[in-house]
Length: 77
Image 1 (cartoon, rainbow, N blue to C red):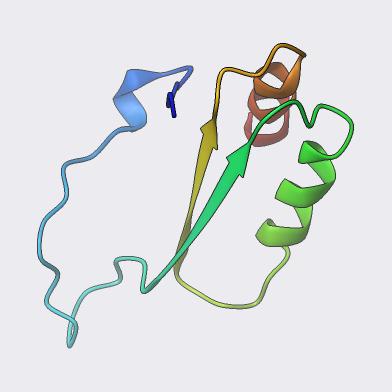
Image 2 (image 1 turned 180 degrees about the vertical axis):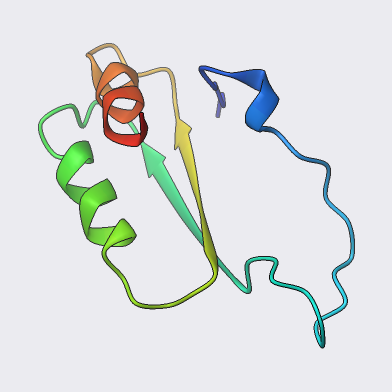
């Protein structure tokens, strides 16, 4: 599975959080995608509308042959 990002500056190193005092994400949502250009924007919107906080959304595109990754970039811009 290949992971791509439009802006490498959004990557942060992982560190063990102090669960008592940190605001780091406590919920991780992994969204693997492959040729889902018609549905991925709606799926991202649904996840971002969740009330759980804080959380992180990790999107992995498995070398889609359609415009899935472009739709992901549009959705998170």
